[in-house]
Length: 262
Image (cartoon, rainbow, N blue to C red; front, side, top):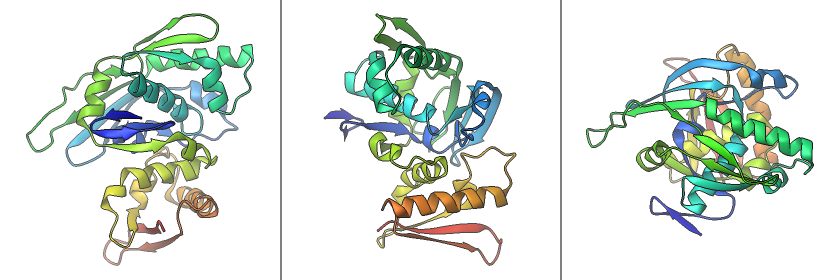
């Protein structure tokens, strides 16, 4: 059990900043188009809340493999309480459900190495109490090889600032990986990110605008709605939510979803 920001995390849990769970940094990328993950994003600029803005540049990152990998590295940083994090590549492969063999270990090593070229900046005006400097921070600073099994992943100090100063939520990777479908993973992260607004009846209402944040702008609303329906059904089948209902607001005709959690 590890205490971060006065919150305890256990096992596969990580205290994940909302800027990673509710932004276009981790995307729904079709698994039959793996080359998309080799594409570079020159710059994504977004506003997560009225006061928080972010920008990201680097490789396209997906929800099914890249998010879990980043989760594991940040989780280990939190458990080990250091910016120089010892990572067991074989253990990571097992947790990701990938066969432990030299070629897969090599691919994993290279993907971690590519995280050096992915950077983020966040500015939060808040209510005047604090303001994060608009400074670009690599998702990982660099990596050192110990042997064929272990590496040391080095984080910048600015990652601590992002975790300590921004909204965060506990994400359990063991629970997340049970979802398997990226559409369900996207909804799951949105629910976790907006869980603080749930009513006493354990129902939350999220707009299509919020739920489509993990989809690229080239996807139409109609395409995203079809994907979301598949994701919601997956969440229901696994017992993560009880039901969902899609509707449109009378004034603005905005698509909204009423999600019953229990």
